[in-house]
Structure formats: structure tokens, C-alpha cells
Image (tube, rainbow, N blue to C red; front, top):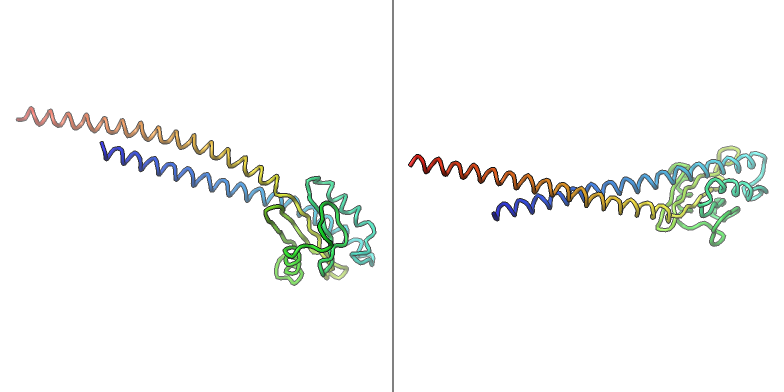
Length: 213
């Protein structure tokens, strides 16, 4: 009986670990999907804004001299009202045109560093930033001869992503409990049936040995 209980506990532990591992992997994949899909949406906004500012620069204007810069950003933000902010900045990180929630007159260090690496060609002309409060997508703005003249970054709150990830985590936990419980019950039934069969076979063997004597 003791061996039977130990086997049952081991199998239940194995089931719980397996279900928890699969649930954790599914959660990671879902979180990665949310981040990738958000970045794709933001890249569309940054690319469209960069094209509009690039067209103005081709006319001989500097990035700061684009008179309709605010209108360009307002139009870009209208595609997704949840966008926190869109910032257009020069090579030194000075903000030239903005829309949405912006603190200060310069981009933060993380954005400036990502822009610097892209400007030097160390990374791609597009870059991404992410922290606990925001996820951002940036792109170089190039002049008439392809030289970088500034950058654009679109920032999006992580609140919605966090809520969706939390909802998925709770659903996965409920599903995991249900699946684990079903597997445990199935294993328990199989072990009980297997043990009963062994006992019957053992009893039959004992009867046969007694009759031979």
C-alpha cells in the first residue's frame, strides 16, 4: 500500500510540473506575441511620419522648419488614440515636434542611445524600446542624400498589454488546474484498476498453489 501511495504522489507531482511548465511557456509566447503585434502597429505609424517629414526635407527645409509638423503628428496619432506620444527630435536629442504626453524638451537617455546606434549603422534604422510603463518604436529621419537628420519615436502604454497578459495568465491557470485535475483523476482510476487486477492475479496464484499442495 505504501508503494502505491508513493507512486501516486510521484505521478501527481509530475502532472502538476508538466502542466505548470506548459502554461508558463504559453504565457511567454502570448506576451511575446503582444509585444510583437504592438511594435508592428507602431512601426507603421513611425514609417508614415518619417515619409511625411522626409518629403518636407526634400523641399529644402530642416527638420525644425517643417511648419506642418504638428499636423503630421496629429494625423499619425489619429490611427491609434491610445498612443502616449510621438516625438520628432534632432541629432542631439532635442525635441522639435511633439504630440501627446511629453516630459521635458529632450528625449530620454534610452531613446537617444538607441537612436545613436541606429545612426551609426550599428543597428537597423528602426529600433524598439520597452520598460515597465511604455513600449516604443523609433526610426531615423533621413535628409535628401540619405544622411540622418533626426529621429521619430512613438510611445505606447504597456497598461493594455499588461491587462491582456494578466487575463491570459488567469485563464491559463484555470485551464491548467482543470487539466491537471482531469489527468490526476484518470491516473488515479488507472492505478486503482491496475492494483485491483494485480490483487486478483495474486489471489488466483495463491489458490492455485494451495490446490497443488
